[in-house]
Amino acid sequence: MKFICRNWYWIGGVIAAIALIFMFCDWSHLSDLSRFAWFAFIIMLLHQFEEYGCPGGEPLIMNLVLRNSPRPDRYPLNQFSAMLVNCLISYIMFPLFIIFPNQIWLGIGLAFSFISQFFVHGIATNIKLRSVYNPGFANVLFMMMPWTVCFFIYIGKHHLADATDWWLGTLYFLIFSAGLLGFMTYKVLPNINSRWTFTPTELKRFNVREKWERIANSKRAVK
Image (cartoon, rainbow, N blue to C red; front, side, top):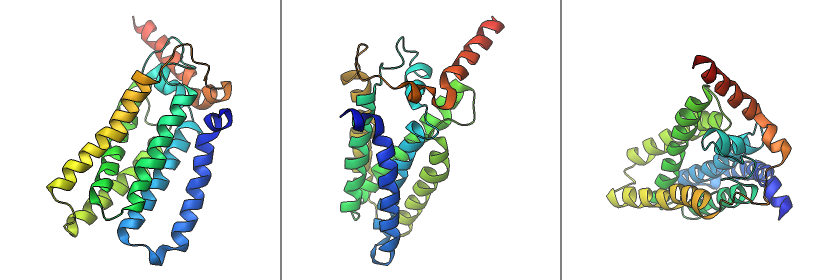
């Protein structure tokens, strides 16, 4: 379990590479919707890799920057909860669209999930860090948003979604993405004394603590 908790995002990066190779090898046999589904799965894995692996830094962004935690190495997000919630989303929510690509509401739910990431990374986190980039935002800007625009154009052009699809897609997003990420991460799994602490290496990535301290110092200087 310790190995998985410390390496799940590296494993996800490898799975994304394998999935990409498989998809292109089988490209001619895949429907357009299947291609959308496979791309969405790969994009999410790469997004998590950017957040936690390279450049990384998401643990302190979540705990220190967004939550001002007294113990940012383990609270409210810890190694175990980060692994569990992200893997549940990546390996349940996204593969379902691969298995059932004609269920348009599944794809709509994924699109809403991608849009929500723009607000988290592109707006909330960048405002807090006073930056134009944070780990995960490149994926959001250059992969998630183009995928979402292309998907909506495609289903609109071919009249594939009705009102039921939009309602089910919204519910799917709220249950799996918003509900799972929010409720489990901040209500069920947090433990200020958790033994699942992030490693010093994970906490050093992207120099989040240094950036946050500079911001805090500048605020004190203004006062």
